[in-house]
Amino acid sequence: MQKYSFFKLLQHSLSHHKNWQAAWRNPAPAREYDIVIVGGGGHGLAAAYYLAKKHGVKRIAVIEKGWLGGGNTGRNTTVIRSNYLRDDSARLYEHSLQLWEGLSQELNYNVMFSQRGLLNLAHSHHEMSTLLQRHYAMIENGIESEILNMQQLKKWLPNANLTSSARYPITGAIVQRRGGTARHDAVAWGYARGADALGVDIIQQCEVQDLIVTNNAIKGVETTKGTIKADKVLLCAAGHSGHLTKMAGLELPMVSVPLQAMVSEPMKPCMNTIINDSTVHAYISQSDKGELVIGASNDPYLSYSQRGSWQVNEETLQAILELYPVFSRVKMMRHWAGIVDITPDRSPLMGLTDVKGLYLDGGWGTGGFKATPGAGDLMADTVANDKAHPLVKPFGLDRFTSGRLVDEGAASGVH
Amino acid sequence: MLLINCPFCGAREEHEFHYGGQAHITRPADPEQVDDKAWADYLYYRKNTLGLQAERWQHSFGCGQWFNALRCSQTHQFKAVYKMGDDAPEGLS
Image (cartoon, rainbow over all chains, first blue to last red; front, side, top):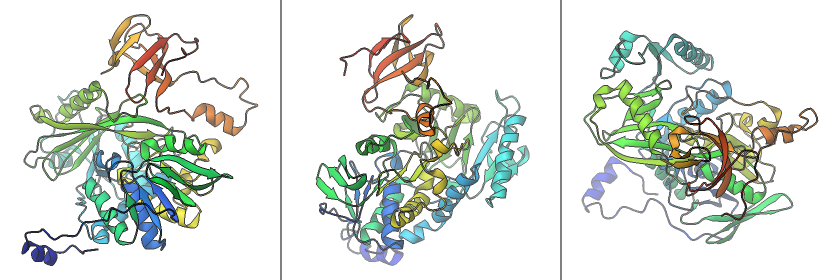
């Protein structure tokens, strides 16, 4: 792998930047691998990277039906945080946040992780009580959180409508200063480059058509580029997880729905933090390019179409204008939808399955991006040792029969 | 926005409706007798169909009635609507 540095940049400028190496190879699939990972988004590529780096697995393939990071990795609003209510989720997302903090150095690739703080706004005494419950739960879990009163909030949000004449006046907020955003494509590309350098074969434009299962053990995958044998297969396919596990005879407790997001035209810097508001319901931040990045709730119905309905956009923008009347003439530039896999308790499905050698990392619903490094790291450990990592264990499929749900109200898109 | 054909009121816009998820789910007749797996199946497991799904909708900002529909999850196209308690029309794809 060609290391990126200021010196290299200078050196390549002499040849007009025409001689940079490709960041990863484009190999044809081999007949057999030790581990096949289905899904070339952030989670799959991160798992491949940590399997090769920390667990020394030599023969790994990542299979992607489209292009790298073309699914939900490239379709989210890039918010990274660990301000979760339940102990199990807090530990999981905090593990991930700590990996984010050193990720650019780890990968020698600038993922543009910017810890600009994440605010959760309250509009009533009761909502503030709910936020305080979360605040103190976080403190108990060793995650920093601060309470903001209206005077402090004015300094954080000078352009927002914080007056008492607002339709739903804001009464307070909590903030996680270590929350932030990152460039989503760079995360997929950084992990892909790192994994490729460690010998992982990344195979794009290759769709899985069937999972080969004999005697309740996984033996490989049938793909559009032929049969690939493997004794271990990890599914990191987000909204398509359930559709894939059905090939092995497994049903999953999840529903795939569209989650929409949009960006505005680029503007001069006017917001230096991230706002999450669950009463008027929307979240917003400003990207480094100057675009406002906006998201809200998912469309209600089952869909695999990567597009959603107009009224959800309308409600989202109404909510943004409620907070920021000053943005009323901003033009929206792009809008899209990703298919998210929502579980009954809004927590992910991770770990082993009833089929030997088949592992699952899915059900992330509306909040998988922030978990990318953590899920990759923990799933690599789980797959390498064929045993759920302690942080992964609470998120196993068995929780739906045991009744030990991780009912996470702090997941995004939850009213 | 989807245009949904309420069997009682005719075609109306999507925001008048409330989505009720997969249709034809039957509560186990004797919950005390079923095992945890069967109970979890009833509570949490859904088919998540890629293609034509039978699902429930309520015309909440109209007549308030629930009804069933066959809709494709890839194209969002409604193939049929039918009343609660009726079987799904067959032969559609």
